[in-house]
Amino acid sequence: MEKTELIFSFDTEDFTSNTAADAILTEAEILRSEGVRGCFCLVGLLADQLVNWGRKDVLDALRYHEIDSHTLAHSVHPVINEYTDLEDFDAAYDEVIRQETEAIRKIRRATGRDKVYVAVPPGDDKSYAAMYAYADMGIPIYADTVCDTPEGDGVWYCNVYNIEYVLGADGEDFFFHGGEAEIRAALDWLARRKRAVFYTHPHMSLFRQHWDAVNYNKINKHPFGEWEKAPRRPAEETKRFYENLRLFVRLAKEDPRFRITTYGEIAERLAERPPRIVRKEDLRLIRDRLREKLYPLTEPDSFCLSDLFRAARAFLLGADAWECLNERGFLYAPEAAKESVILTAEELRQSAAALPASGFLPVRIDVGGKAIGPADWLLAVYEVLCGAETVWIEPGKEQLPSLDRLPLARDLSLKGTWIHSDSFEDNWLSDRLRWQSWTMRF
Image (cartoon, rainbow, N blue to C red; front, side):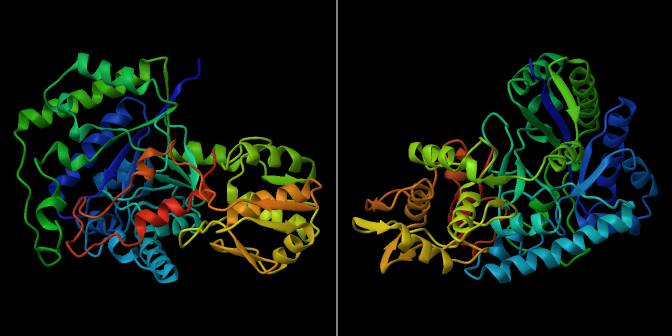
């Protein structure tokens, strides 16, 4: 039986409280003493604060563990969703690159680490623009995502490997009030998944409220450095939390159903995979699969629809093979053919020359003076590549794959969630995330 990969992940974020840094130290030492490496996802501003506070003890404790990114400023407004909810993708993308490059610089300066394997968005900051930016920054994994299966398979989406958070200790009563029976029940639940991220916010072992709930809910409530303190927990609750954390780690380590790992180990395995290449001998299989369903392929390799679109264009223009690299989806909703049309192989070949070789996909394609959808074009081209001289296009066909295996992405609606400002409208983010489904692959 295949073991569940279990990651211990820590949203390490409270840059308002030196006292909260004590919790980072304690939780890092609990894991180290049990022989387990955790993944401490560090906010860039907190990395600076640990240096400013002289917390060499915390930084030393973190040396045993993997260090990753939890964004530059977490909840400082405008948060990522607020500044990327733009029609202008380039403006949104450029600001993510600017801020998150600075986050990595701060993390590296404080910790001495060269490699960051994962970017973890805070709260409901699920921005497609950030996914693309992180991928282009060389960060291979995006965690706490809405783009994973309920079973924790891991999904490529917007060129990063997406892994969902599934169990957070700060929201579980058993970590403050329960005991071994509740922990074993949680492990039973986690063991049903392919991969499970168990996460905590270290500061919540000490405080009853999140630091940003009292300082950054909807607005920046105080000048930087003049923060309100969250109410403390009773000492006995904190003590129970740490006892249960240690017990959870110990039981998980001893449980043969789990293999404890890190984001970095997963990233290194992903990097070992050979290049993904669409070859001429694959064309008939691809056509047959697309006839069955507009969906990513898992054979002869892992191909997203955008991979197959670019490969189709390349083959029409005379290529012998197509190496899949980074791809993009749509900035606007793709439009199906509005009437039945018959296209010739030559018309499709001519249309290929007018298509860009990279970038976001066209929402409609002109073929011989007739407008068809990108999925219409994709299926028609694979028919031609397999020998057809004419192809009949039916009107109104679905242009996007089903997101039923990614229900959180399918149902995403970000307005009014988390600590977003009242002015945040979610005009683009939720829809555009779904329109990137042509980059989804398994």
